[in-house]
Length: 239
Ligand SMILES: C[S@@+](CC[C@H](N)C(=O)[O-])C[C@H]1O[C@@H](n2cnc3c(N)ncnc32)[C@H](O)[C@@H]1O
Image (cartoon, rainbow, N blue to C red):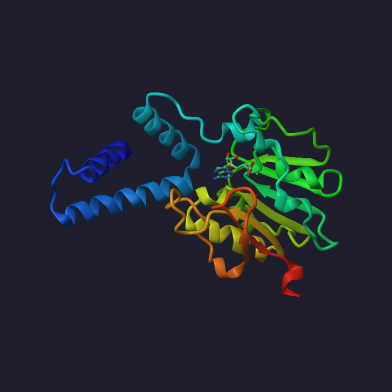
């Protein structure tokens, strides 16, 4: 059904089906809603369908994130480098944990190894990840941001000493869960965030960007990529 909705929309887009305007709009919004629901509720199925769609389009299976969690230096050497924005970060002294959602091979953890508790989550099993180094104090969970959000909403987890970080992960999540994730972290006491993501309106990332209000953060350019922005909300910057 999803494939037929997608095919209908694609055909409409290329002008092969001349449906009345009302039907066209209904098809578009149904397709959009289906896509949105599927992506937020069943990210693994969404990812699998995305790969099938890409296979039909290109004739081969595109690897979307594998090179991130396989630390594939051949394809993208920078993927194993420390994230510059984290190298000299001044965290409040009481912060004892970094939570990286969508941590892939753990490059965000490099500056904090043996200093903080490292807590990474991603959608793949632990065994699929080639860590950029053998971290000693790492807790990894195979869980989506969406499911983690629900846990934070449900359980009284103390995040007051946790620094929440993400780089290029929230962009793949719908506005509802992005906001729920951010709100749930705050509700559990988190006061220190850094998100590296694309701002709304970035060319090439029309659907994949930060969907939490930018006004809540201090915003600066990222040295990693001219389109990427660094969104920070830190205790010290508000004191
Ligand atoms: C563009 S990669 C960035 C990886 C890593 N943050 C980095 O900068 O090297 C996006 C990461 O988000 C993960 N991801 C995608 N959707 C996710 C979801 N719903 N929940 C948790 N992780 C997700 C992918 O598996 C992948 O590791």
